[in-house]
Length: 236
Ligand code: IPE
Ligand code: IPE
Ligand code: MG
Image (cartoon, rainbow, N blue to C red; front, side, top):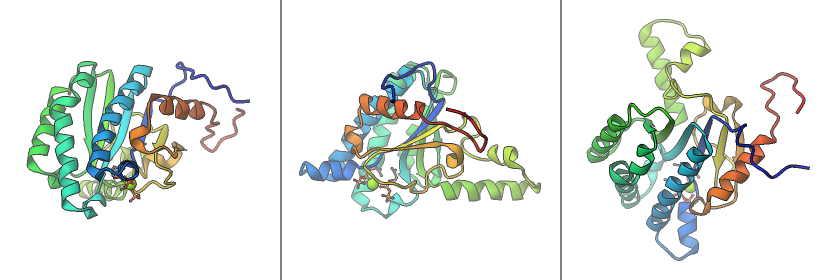
């Protein structure tokens, strides 16, 4: 029998969200997709805040993939405008609690005003050391790996696994413990491919804008019942 109480003394250090289902959430309500994204960002801030309140040190969030450029321009523009609002204002409460903002992805391709507000937020929070919010923007796991390979080639040295990990965006972060994906899709969609090697996976049918604090607790309780063996033999 599984206990359904969250043990806050055994939390993962690093969790990651694939925040999926904003569009379908909106469609079911007869709303434009943009309203799904708006609700999704409100939810993201709340759920991430809950994770930090519980004591999870690092939260990664997939905000925009290298493949999401294939969406209509209006939707992409709307998303970047939303992100900018969060970097400039909405995340301020999180930053005041000691959250450091970090980003992974190729930022050179995103709108200039968003790049600027992002850099300002990263600068403002650089000395915060309690929590890390790591946002994946114009991020692809395959790109991250190819980029690291090219960096290694430029240095002219063979690399082993620890040396290679120092070339990834996540070099300063704890190992990834848990990946949570909403909306019922059972795939990674090019997210944290390297880091996922020994992460646990949790898939929920809930559309992201409805993924509330209770849903996160449920995912964490589920995680606490996993037997992470890392290839060895361990009794649960
Ligand atoms: C996830 O929701 C948010 C982003 C990809 C930015 P979607 O926009 O993918 O929502 P669905 O999957 O179409 O429902
Ligand atoms: C993954 O969701 C990307 C983000 C959550 C930002 P998608 O909705 O883009 O993934 P697919 O297309 O269903 O695989
Ligand atoms: Mg989707």
